[in-house]
Length: 473
Image: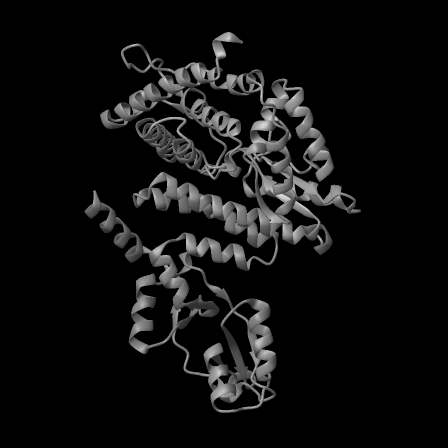
């Protein structure tokens, strides 16, 4: 398997085209442009090189000016910052077509001892390929997506970057990357996209006086597939933004365009219940704790998993601190909170046989494990969000032993991996998906993993029943 993975990674790189890597847009300046103006242009475009035009008409020539050229001319040679950049520019362009192989670009850079090449498309300059981006593609395609997110200048750029995440997931999975690492990578990219979108839409004063949060599986860092939006906005007490409704509506609409479906329960920033001042969140938390009906328990559960992605993170910290301080100490509250762990039957028989032609892996396996661990974590007033982190902390607190902790962690990862594999095989990675698994589509090893995982979940539900005295309520 190790050899196959290594060969797959090398084959993927050897077959990749230049257009698959990040290409910096062509930014032109005139040869008479000053060194100071050139540096300002690089800063504005977040690039390390510019294309320089010298001459006119048939006599026009184009060269490349890098930040290194400017550094050597101004700092080492003492040229004034008002000097034109024409004399500092290299006009011997080395270029490759955008559909050439990426490994060819690496060969050319190595041969000529350069860090960038000009990329052409149908004979015209399309941009510049930097060595760091080429090497980033070789090490991990996520580097390319992250750069595109960071350099996005409008909603269209951000949408393009978001659309590449499914391809990244497929590549990581095909190369044998563990599902836990894929989830961490996708979480980081998703949160950066959300933050970048909010920064594009929100004025500076709103950014300074609010905290954008993600909740549920996104907050726990366990979401790989694009599922329902679960987000909210905490405002600083006393602050009012005149265009807030329009901004939150555009934020939710844009995420839907990016492929993040609307939440059926309307747990989104465009809903007043989830965009309110800190005092409003404290009031809601108080009601969730002291009037724990079904809706309140759901809201409490997803908010407990919340993570800040943009704005002032201390607003979320204050809200979560209030949640932990407000929690009731009586057994009845935690029993009611933990009861959804038993809401769905685990599809495993007495003799560890899988029950049904298709199984809902989320309801039957992932949810009871996640919510059971969440219930234990809330009881202990823990601040950890990720389920695996919560399991380790519960182990340290002596709630269960190492064997149980290991079994729970491995079961969760196994079920997440199976669900991901089947969604990839069904071609549903970029769409909203169901959570059904057909045992007849699994090989023997996968069926055994599923049986063992569901058996562990079943035993864990018994543990939760005993721990929270669920048979008494």
